[in-house]
Image (cartoon, rainbow, N blue to C red; front, side, top):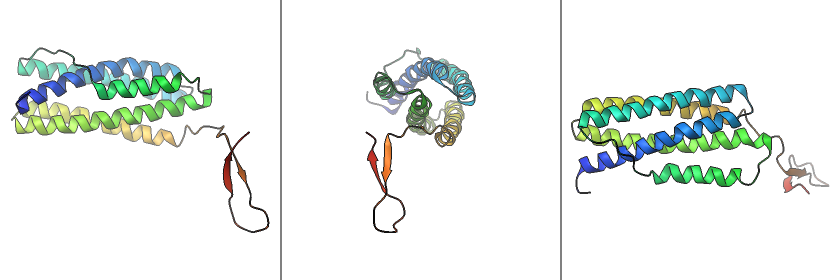
Length: 180
């Protein structure tokens, strides 16, 4: 890879793979959700992500490039991390938190990559592509904000800690220790 254009196409191919992977993952997250509002959110973002795939395909058509997918190591790593956690048979009250956390990580990765693609598209004079990428990045940002809102609403009930109160003084609080 020697040029900004080659980098742009390479990153676009990675994002095509990432978005296609996330279409599948979002379906799994919707099925795993224990809350209806979270399930609907994952389903809505899955539909939106299918639109992101279509936008990327449109950009490839505009460029006259073949829309090949290249492994996206970043998203693959996040998917692998979530599968590792799920392999530990988490309690049901942790599932929504795990899925929201995984979603936040994926959105931040996507936003960063789209920001880079937008800069490259603008530098290369591909203003239509830049506009389409900004539209996708803005939708990813809105999803990130919704997920961050959910974090406070999907708190696990079993923290696995007890709080030991200090004896003999009036200090508020205590020291969290692992429950036996």
